[in-house]
Amino acid sequence: MRIGILGGSFDPPHVVHLIIALHAQRQLKLDKLYLIPAAIPPHRRPKTVSSPGHRLGMTRLLVRGIPGMNVLDLEIRRGGRSYTVDTLRAMRRRHPRASMFFLVGSDNYRLLNTWKDPDIIRQLAVITVYPRGGIRPVTRKLDKRDRILRGGPHVMSSTEIRRLAAASKSIEGLVTRGVERYIHRNCVYAAQRPRGTAR
View (spheres, rainbow, N blue to C red):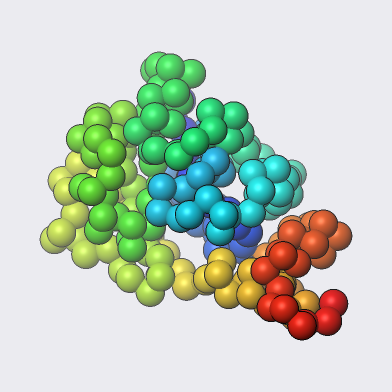
């Protein structure tokens, strides 16, 4: 079995997340691809992250009805800061014989050696780098054990989507229709609206 893992804040999950997941599914010939929202991303202050329940709900809507794609609440149930190595260990226990591919953006790949236990991460899964933030993976700087996902580079800012949603501006085309409806119906980013701004 071939399994892909795409983690992140998913705050909110947007169309580029979906494009990356579809590219990975096809290029890596994955049997299953799991999207795993972080409980508390190590790089963000807890107060700046939307509730785990909202992020989990939106991520499920993002991939609903797509064969082979699933959302796991593994990190949310574990609580605390979400470290990749802990998640990969848990996934390896679930799928001891599977070939695992961990998807990481080219912007974060450059920082991989500063993560918790990077060597163990590489033992547990094949690091697969996708273009992100306008940064293309540089093949000569790639670890020989890692690989590149073709496509992109993909540029989309979750921060900008949150800002637009908080200001009651259109986010059509940036997120799927189901996610857009969820954001508006549940006022997910209303708390981030600048003071004095009318609804």
